[in-house]
Image 1 (tube, rainbow, N blue to C red):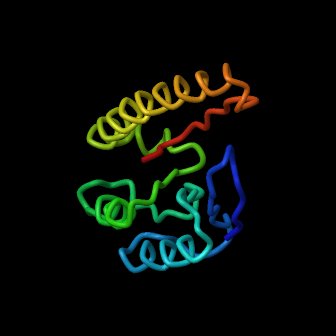
Image 2: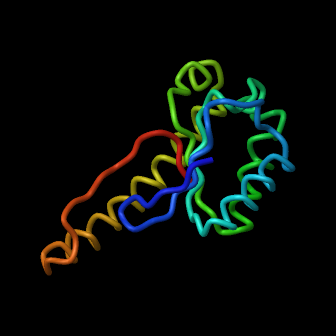
Amino acid sequence: MIVYSLHGERVAEISHRGGPLESERDATDLIAEAMSSDARLVAIPAERLSSDFFQLSTRKAGHFIQKFVNYRLRIAILGDISHHVEQSAPLADFVRRIQSWAGRLVRARQQRIGHAAGAGEVSGVARAGGLCH
């Protein structure tokens, strides 16, 4: 895990190397490590998630993500998950809902940042893609 600041937010980015992540225990381990470094966002490469993670009927994604919600940490899945989305209507719906919610959040933050930039407080805005909570 590497930890860095991105636009004033501490990010803990998980290495693309390592075993698959899928269980609540895996989530708890990542949360503990992220919190020990004061990270508020955990970025996980899609290739680190087990193949059945994206099958919502297994409930692995729900339980995994819920752990982050419980600890008030944000999570981002980095990479292309389109092949999983194409194979699952429920996952496609889930991703659409998250992106809709995240899009509203990003627009609200951009408005706040834009207001701050007008006051000379911020020099730029970046937007990351992927599934983000």
